[in-house]
Length: 256
Image (tube, one colour):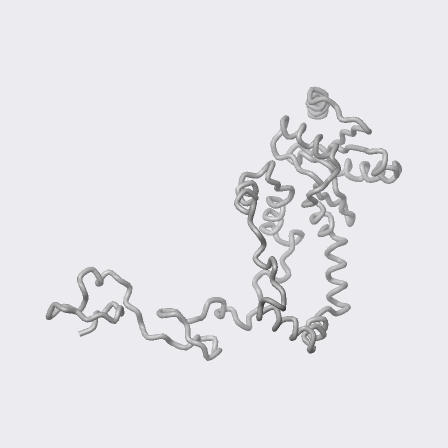
């Protein structure tokens, strides 16, 4: 008699249903068709193939934005400004990926059949089919998202801000925790990116270089709008202060 655990081995001891030690194994059931109706078999003891239980149903996240759902807003805020300098998780991931080559390095249609098949498909109408989903409506949706803060959020992940800005951010990080680079802030319908922020203290620190901040009237209007929302500004122009000066300026703002 074969072992009841499904290992397909024969039980040698008469009267036993299992080979010694196999009784604790999960008994495999016969495969059944996926309940979604795709015609493929699910894994043993499963009703659906992975991901097929929501087939044909809308995503539960459709329509959820940080403006309408508190959970999305909180998740968005935890991601902003995370770098390997100020977040242990990002640092570990960066160290893990250091020295690794991308999976598709050196893949060409001359050396790999899968790449060749994709290239032929795109040349024989697949490219036009994919482009058919890129409609005017989708352009408008993406444009609205970029205007409503997505562009500034993306800017918060820029890996090459100005060198003085990075040096100033490192100085402030030695004084206060939770310091962010290129932090997005929304005032009414306008979304701005602040050079360096301490959100928990509502402190904004700007480094005005002679090249990047030539429009002083625009900078002043932007600052006035954000000050209406409770932000307090510190500006340094064309020169990085020593750490003692930065600390003194922050403490003076907290006394106000």
